[in-house]
Each structure stands twice: as C-alpha cells, then as structure tokens.
Length: 184
Picture 1 (cartoon, helix red, strand yellow):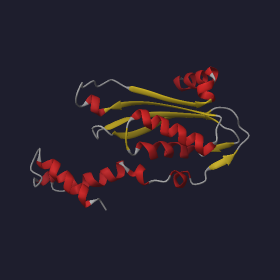
Picture 2: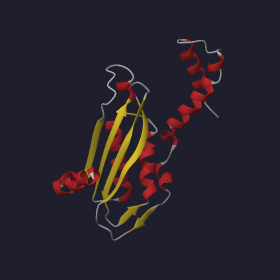
Picture 3: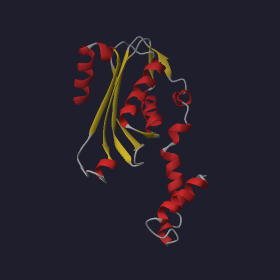
C-alpha cells in the first residue's frame, strides 16, 4: 500500500504544474507513491536476507566476474534516474557467492537515493565483507538523467566509477586482468 504522506506530497507537486484533478492525473499520486516505494526498497532490505546463505565453500582462487549487471538508481540531488551497468569481480578466498546474489547486492544499494560514487563503493565493500575475498573490483558505467534532461542537457555523456579493494588495488596485474576482461 503506497504511503499516504507521499501521495499528498505528489499531489502538491502536481498542483504546481497542472490541475491534479484532471482525469489523467487523478491516480498519479497513488501510482507515483507506489513507484517511489519500489525504487527506494533498498532502504528496507537486509543484505543477509537477500544473500540468503548463498555463500559456498570453494577451492577456486581464480577471478570471478559478473559483467553487465543492469542497474537503475535515483540521484539523491535531483531525484532523477541514473541507469547503466555494473561489473563486479572478486578473487575467492575459500568462499564463492551465488551468481544471482551479486546482482541482488547491486539492486539493494541501487534502490536508494544515491550518488554513483558511493554506490560503487557500497557494492564492493558488501561483496568483500560477505565473501572474505582476497580482493574485489567494481566498475559502474551510467547515464544520469539529471545531466541529460536538465542543466547541461548532454545526452551521450556517461559516468564511470570504480572501486578496487585488496589485490585489485594492490596488484596492478590483477587490476589489468579485470579491466581487460570486461572490455572483451
């Protein structure tokens, strides 16, 4: 059930631009409140519940990459979307995480009002903490609607951020391997 306070706020915002009683806008506050609840569900999710014990023992010590995880988030400065893809790599240290759980971790943090720089670091820290990996690398490439729809209005600009932890930070060879594999 959408939050009634959010519905009222949306109705107030609509009134600054149009008649909220217009037929096409009558149910907009309710729909927008429900959408906002979904788009910010990451605040109400517990990482351990999302991962659901999908951490498994493994002798693998080679790099694991989950590439091109699509992500949708909202800029905390303008409450406008940013969309893109996330690449997550880690080098296991006795444990691997279920494949779908990597994408779910991305969603937990993306479904918050966010800046891309922090999102990248939050994902990397979570994977590192959950798996005890020797290192984690995360790269996000995204287009920001706050830059595309308003302000400078640059449609084709992309922001890229990275966080490198452990051997991805300390070992240039490991970092280079990750960067070259995601370009293939």
